[in-house]
Length: 290
Image (cartoon, rainbow, N blue to C red; front, side, top):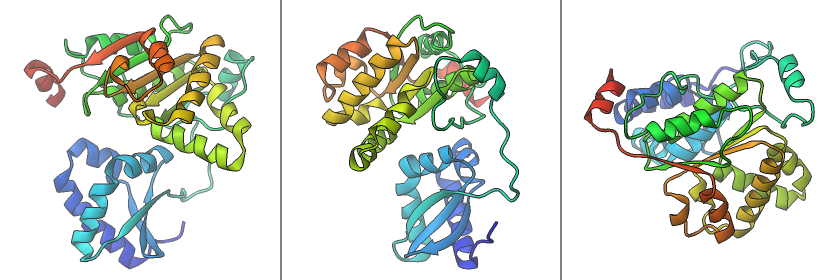
């Protein structure tokens, strides 16, 4: 693995020191602690992260804060680019499930082009259940059934209440049971669709999103106002449902209030199991801290 340029490394280490004071410890430990400043490319600092999911999370959730922190450290605007760091050895990473078991369990459907990497900390065991999120937790467990009972499952609530945690927990459970799982943010789905339209690669796009047993989509509200992407998601959902696959989505509002979505898509979402998450009461907050 190429060693990082000293200036890139030192700048990022200084920025990390400030970021550690500005984000919660779980966020820092999960997303930032294992990153490295690698090099500069066209005045952009390239930061390495251990997984694809980590780079996507940093890009979509933390980039504004990171850019602001880098500017404060460097004294001028520094853009940032995230990439997956190459492992020190050529040994392949361990599989999240046994490929032979997956081929035995799923014979009628091809595997998607890539398997997701879920945060190992976000499991059902680590999810603190309280009265405020009990229905959402039960809905997530129901989504792991071998045969879908409710389709889709919609989990909605404000930021930071555990929606993404539950999607990761579903992913862990379904992978362990041999299912083919695709996890994606709605923003990534839209970007992939735009790329497919530009490159005329719709078949590859549809093979990825319609050849799984479980599709998990985070932050569905991002599709509001994107008419063509909504249409593609609508047909993707219908194909998966007809094939007996499970679809689970999260959003910041219940389906009826996602007014930027087409009426037929809102109707499909509302016809499934819709579960909300409320801010935790004192007892639940205390359990989370413990």
